[in-house]
Image (tube, helix red, strand yellow):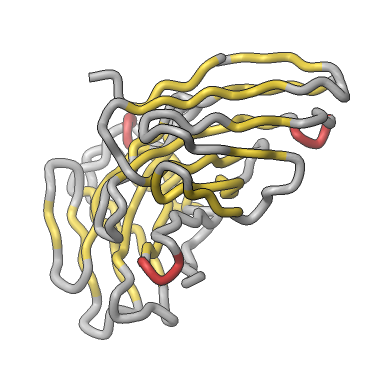
Length: 113
Length: 111
């Protein structure tokens, strides 16, 4: 049981480049979300999805796009990377109920130079 | 989104119990109280959750005040591996069941 898998684990981008962070879960969870965590700070919600075909914005959505074409996958796209997007990104999944436990991936450490 | 308030940091001795408080005075009747922790260089991991009654699992206990405006995460015997940031979060369907993290409490465990 793989849980939540994020790829890549590390990435260096140049300013202006685009890339996609991948997130996949094998638990058939309805709910998936993306967070960023800057040094010494808590996690901030970027985007989330309550099911295939449904996405919504979190606290810090600017500069990021998401889509949810399947239950398993929830990729996060950086359209034009900026140094301010240097961060550690975490993906999470859970069932859709308020009582549901969330599972997190191990994170992607992104540096934009 | 419902908000929680936690102390910035706490310190405990190894093998002693730890009580991590959380205030959530604006909690609604359908908000679940969740606790997660984040070990250094890792993603958050689920610890425990509850609605009204106190809860126990293999990791910890959750004590919920009768008015639900506060809760306490109890680690019965702290170990060095429990040193982490602990987050108290309210999750509610009204807000799309989002998990919105605050700053959390940094728990330091002394040997």
